[in-house]
Length: 174
Length: 92
Image 1 (tube, rainbow over the protein chains, first blue to last red):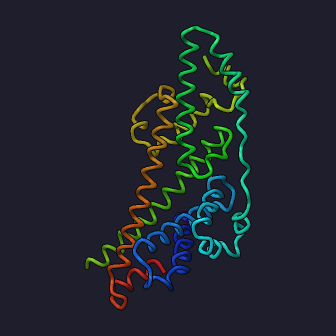
Image 2 (cartoon, rainbow over the protein chains, first blue to last red; image 1 turned 180 degrees about the vertical axis):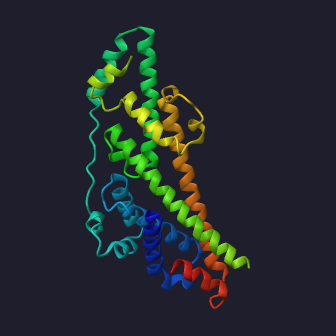
Image 3 (cartoon, rainbow over the protein chains, first blue to last red; image 1 turned 60 degrees about the vertical axis):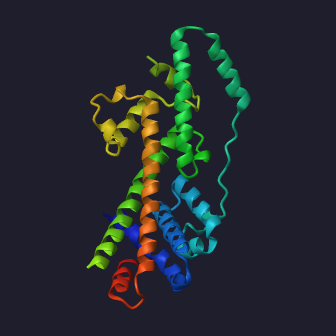
């Protein structure tokens, strides 16, 4: 698929940027470069159109600014490195007030509904913790959309990396 | 039953049933346990969200593991060997 090919190309580019120093680096530094360039490659496939990809690029830039700049130079995503994502204000007073109103009704089904809501909220918070930029996704609809796109991108990343590693290991065993 | 309420309220913390059903149908391809259930409306929202979380974490672990293996591969080959050439052709 073209998504796999594009990811591979960008990932290769990232590794090429790193390769001159590959002899002098430790295994853990190499792993870091492999992983960071894979993440930037994955995020850049989205060309800045999703929240998770912008957040991931920013996060990777804080870990290795040079690598990210090199990988994105000449592409539209470069300005994204410095772009600030808006932080969402949580209107605690409003949330507290609506909770009070809800709790006044003592019927069992209402209590169950409140419990169910709490559980969903807890689980969506869990999702926000694993999706990059989750903390900036104010609506649950956005969170779900971003999650689906993020999963597809992760699968691409895993599939391509797996093919490469399997091929390399097979080539070496011969 | 709760559909009318979810459509009227703009409360940001609530996922409507329609959106949940849509999410479940899309996640079905990814999550084998949910795929086995015939009726999508019976799957609870929290279960889907939990499974999604678990799946994403699993993918993260896979990427980490693959990065480990690759960095070890690069480490274990002699610079001038044929193996090094194999890797270089694949990656660089």
